[in-house]
Image 1 (cartoon, rainbow, N blue to C red):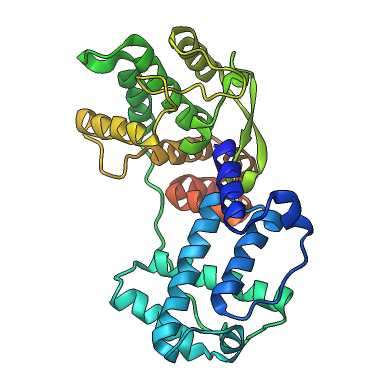
Image 2: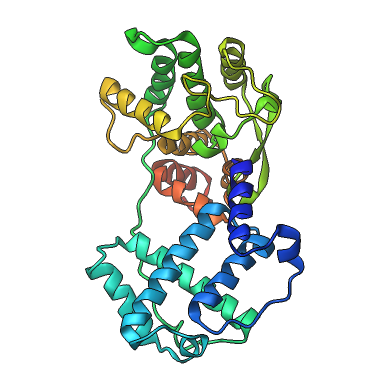
Length: 336
């Protein structure tokens, strides 16, 4: 996963005729058009902010849409000077277009607004093109959705069925692979992308795993015995030995496992166990956090295990287990 991100950044830099060393030391030019400013913004994200490939793609997509809107809105290709003169109403008009014509959900519009704020922050800090008035709009509110964890019994059953195939004619090593991946999601709280980024150097499974999460941040995640055993069993059966820098989870033909196959696995498990549509690979990670909280784990520890940058993100899980928090409050508060 890390390699793919770096490759994407290198390819993007090549489009600008730069290598990473040149870009990091190259003086900031003074762009004239908004699209030139976006190009500078992209290089800055890659070389100085070292943002992930997905983050850069999202910023490029949102800001490009905004610039295209301005072409129609202003009657011509916008320049940096135009960006400095825009009002809050211009930005609101763009967000309204995203809602009515593009039919974007509130969460997607909130992301687009965040991309635009990041772009304008760059214009202010690096190009002296501030426009505080344009940024005085109210971002679309994201719908408050609580995660939907699986009950403990069903989460465990899902791993068991994935591991024995439930009568399906599937190669033993593939069954072991599926069980190992779900074990990492539910037993260690990894994101699917993090689980699929494990390489040969992570086998045999250690007691503590070094995980590269969002924004390339590193965290240490302990692996309980059952998770280590699932990984080691898969590594023993897999017919495609992985070098230290190669992914351990492989498809049937030996290539890196496509995450879509794990999503299909969860679709099968939903049918067999009667689970709701919300029972996705990510729901296994939600279940990990929720069940830890329900069994006495504290939010700070869960935050570290999940790799959340902010405790407020982890606090989403308190809404899931409100009953336990009410019980703790009733038992612990001196006036209860």
